[in-house]
Structures are given as C-alpha cells and as structure tokens.
Image (tube, rainbow, N blue to C red):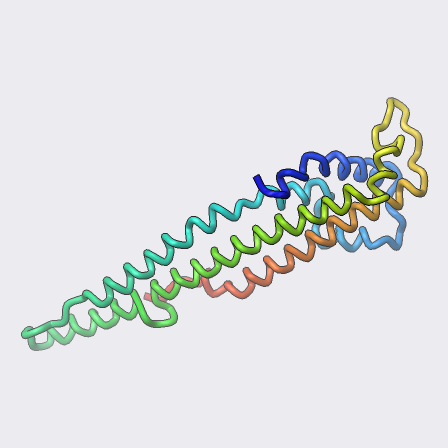
Length: 210
C-alpha cells in the first residue's frame, strides 16, 4: 500500500460530493474546470480511480525478463556456426543466410535484441511514470482534503442531499469546481507525460523486417 492507497478512501467521498454539487448546479461558465474536463474526459473521482488502478510493479517485473531475452538473441546470433570447410554455392548460400539471421537476431536497429531492449526501456520508463503519477496524485489529494474548499463541501447541504435537496449556494459551487479542476489539472499533466512516452515509442508497433 502506497500513499495514494492511504489517502484514496478519504478523498473519494469528497470528490463525489463535488460532483453532486456540479451535477446539481453546473460550474461557472468561464471556470477552468471545463478545459480540464475536455482534456481528461472523466469526472474527478473516476479519473482518480483510473490513476489508482495503475500498477507499476507489474511492468518493473517484466524488465529483467525482456533484457534477458535480448541477451539470449545476441548469444544465439553469435553462436551460429560458419560454413567451416564447407565450400561451393550451398556453403555461400548458407553463410549468406547465417549473416541475415544473425542480423535479424542482434546488432541492427531492427534486430530482435534491440527491439527487446527498447521495449524494456519503455516498460522501465512507464513503471517510473506510474510511480510518480501515484505519488503526485496522493500529494494533490492530501492538499485538497486540507483545503478550505473541502471544508465548504463537507458542510454543504447539497453534498449529502436529503430527499428534497436545497440548490447549492454559490460558495459551494465555486468550491466544487475548484476541487475538481485542481485534481483534473494534475491528472491531465500526468497523462500528457505518458502520451509523450508512448509517442516516442511508436516504432515499437512496427513489424520487424524479416
């Protein structure tokens, strides 16, 4: 259990309260929350749950296996036997094939070992990003829980509506929008980082030439 798991239980009800206020009254037309909603495309509580579902350990565990597979490819390429005393067209054809297989296994930019190493690098980077994302969101939620906006929402009648809830007051609406926007802004920034990582690794989606 990390810091995000610890703070999530307290933060989720607050975010749901903010969502209920905004659902009842909407947010101010020019408030930044609208931009953040367009970026993230999730309400704050759901967006937080999406980050909380990230598990960096699973990726970090795959890195050694990927690097081991890359070393195996390099070893297999180095162990391909030359023709030796074998001569003639068949020997030349075999040696040509041996070099092509070796290049496919290791050394070249599009070789299997280079692709496996690049995949390991990506897994390592994504695992690091997930860890940083969880830590950053945990710190953000802790800030939100200690904010004056959180206090406003906790005492808001609209936050815990009775059978016939009263319309939210302007202060409640502003507090809900501020809380939601702050959380979504942090998550949007985190996912921009992840998009850049994936964009820089698009070559991994291309088939290796045979």
